[in-house]
Image (cartoon, helix red, strand yellow):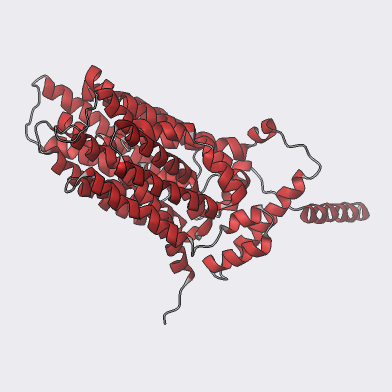
Length: 480
């Protein structure tokens, strides 16, 4: 029987997380196949344009209202308990969707799926970041975007072949598989250390990593001991926590990283892909092109896993962000010239190329990088809280974009809509340029110390340093 290596174990626990992420990608892309089928005469549903936008944006609204629901479970009950909760909610959400016979039941199903989604966002990156080795952490975290993109592709493909009820039934198995796999996964070593359960932390860490990374393990435990010592006898206030650089800097950074990913088309291409394709490309088979672009997304997401493993984080983020901005500007000029009959060339290849460029930039860097960053930049002691706070940006931007998209299209056209998103992209990239550190190859403790400006040391080390300083001072006096 072949030996099960630490890397294989890291792949297993990441796959368990990945099945839930695929399910959430499917939930994001579900409106693209649900709404056209509901508008058919024999569907039994009569929806208004406003109800369409609510079905698409309810997940985003749920994210906004439930951004802090994950923090309490992750922080007090543990990462595994949070993952169990997410899987069960996902199963319930899909069951209600399958059985829905009215608009309001569909909304209830979307709300429950949204709660599952919002709890998964801070957990997925935190858990993968805590489970995996620094040398392969970037690639594992990049699979978050790959899994979510595959979920969107999967639901679009299946939904174009069978009914939306049967599509939801297929999607039901994704959180179920994740639930079963989680039963065989360990608790996060970092969370165990934060709870003072150091021996359990060592056991879980060595199960995941083997015995080749003991230095990182002991540094993590020493930092947690030092943190607890530093809090003894001190009154910790919310204001004091907010003032900490290692607390507020990552939150501001992730606010803008999440907003950037939404502005670049992550949610609009999932929920309104056929509308965008028709507005940019004209009278084409939008369903066919949707599947083509979804296929490109999967291939590019797969490529991103290897690219992120090789290149620096800042290089990936700003290169992809710049490319996404260029694609948006290209769409604006193309549609403007087409509407004014001023195009120097004709043919479907140019708008197809512009949308393909947008998908490439989005999938290779803009979408996977926030997940990578979220697994690296938050300090262990505040990881649940800081991750949940940063979700306010993701959820509010997602809801705002999904709820206003059809209104923007109707009022200013696709070119005006893309102009609004372009301004948002520029702003987010500027802020991130000054805040984003290079984290490739660094341990989570080193990244945390970098935001803080100095490492936390234990009282024992402080006393040793003080004793050494006293000895040095005595030696100096004796010489003089």
